[in-house]
Length: 283
Image (cartoon, rainbow, N blue to C red; front, side, top):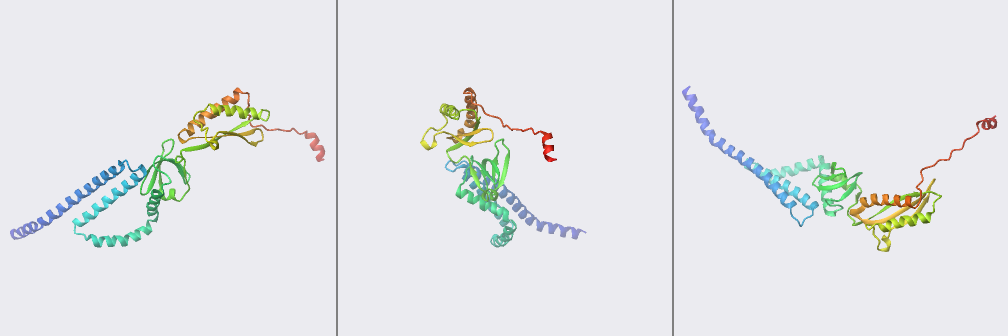
């Protein structure tokens, strides 16, 4: 028994250096992983804070730098345990081809994000619609675009969905045109109605008055079933679009009321037939 106990002690003593070595490697791996995560987050924040880069580019590069640092940390950890990183990279390259075929959708998001970053159809802060989804762009990441609706609902859209659809950017151009449709009665004086609306437009300082092709216009567009349809067309700064639309709609309605111009309701003409005469004709 004493000999067996001594033999076990000897074996344990021989294994202690190995346990210490692997324990040190494990602790080192944990520290490297933590350091990689901390450095990746720090580098990402530093890129975000670079004033010379706009928010779209800084967000994309920040995410790329974060994942790149984590990848280097993982490769370093594997080297700590004696894994041949050169051969590992070769294996990963072969496996990456198979994984790439299986994850075509995910990789297409990265490719689409790169193209969106290069061509720049929008930037952070723009209001866009793409693929039937509209919102203000918050970030452009490696895999998706984050947006917020006007009522502050969070939307995550894969980059490939944005790239493969028509992108409508409502914020990019400095000025925008808008039309307000107004209907007046057939019994009203159309000339008087137009002058009344033009006077309301003249009072609004946010409407562009120059150049000539941007001057406000009031035009008769259609003779409807129960009204003469007018188009009130004007140009304004993009920041005034919605406030001006709401304010001017109210001002036009009040100006027409004051001038005695009516805005008609839909009407229908109903003819009452004599049932007796119809039955006689049928007989």
